[in-house]
Picture 1: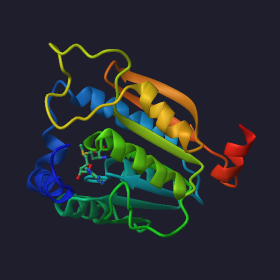
Picture 2 (picture 1 turned 90 degrees about the vertical axis):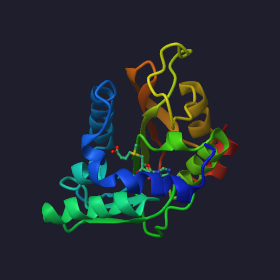
Picture 3 (picture 1 turned 180 degrees about the vertical axis):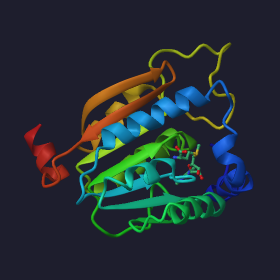
Picture 4 (picture 1 turned 180 degrees about the horizontal axis):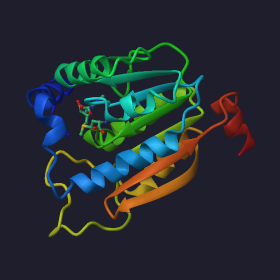
Length: 215
Ligand SMILES: C[S@@+](CC[C@H](N)C(=O)[O-])C[C@H]1O[C@@H](n2cnc3c(N)ncnc32)[C@H](O)[C@@H]1O
């Protein structure tokens, strides 16, 4: 995407207070279905730490807070983070922490059991997606659930689902990026021919070097 992180963050900050209401009506059912699948597949237990990257106004992070031990939401937009914090305070949640962080540097040093991300990774061009997935693998989660625009076939250029801001990859390309860093893709949910959810898992004690040797 031809925009700096700061510019993109500012763009989201400008719409942050209306974000939860303004999804285009054609996109919204798809976005909601995708979000529900991300929450369902994340499936944290009471001791799990969940990291939500590109958390926005906290849709996924807040939905998981009731089941997880702790949820960390990271985003590049101060305005979106502010909205997420406000919603968390309104709900009286004490196990959720929102702050600045980006895919390739989440600004979080603790243990992470599950990483989730919904409708955010598509903002990165392919090479940065690859770096982001490497950074996520380095955090050592046992599961990464990615909901995002992704192409199950060849998108019809005359009928784009998203007309701006989407740097989509094919499902095959994303699966390759995930398997390259040692994840096993255990589920692929097709929400629409341009939107899906990938579930990637890895044994937390199995370092990438062992995986390479066993291939
Ligand atoms: C379309 S919103 C989705 C928010 C939320 N995940 C949801 O499902 O409602 C995309 C979010 O990704 C954030 N974002 C974009 N690029 C990012 C990056 N490189 N690192 C972290 N967050 C990013 C934006 O600031 C925005 O809040």
